Image 1 (cartoon, one colour):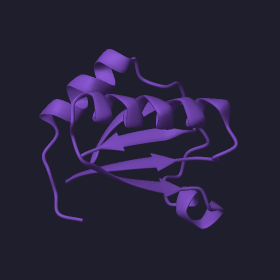
Image 2: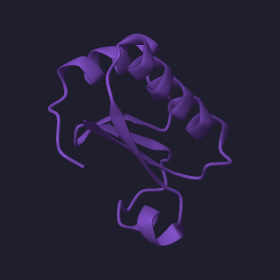
Image 3: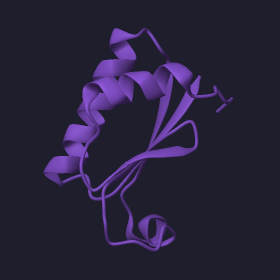
Length: 85
């Protein structure tokens, strides 16, 4: 299972688009993911940035501020290391 972390406010339009992209592309590639969403202020503060949302796939940050393209998300999902959750 691939760990995907999404950090930011779930009411943000860009956050919602990142979420949609990663879920759609994982389903399209038939990759099982564990989506961890950090929406609370305490969880967000540990990243020490105001440039949100952020998307991590397999522990690597692939997008910050603006959503990645669907192609980039798909490529990152395919090459990311899988971790037990």
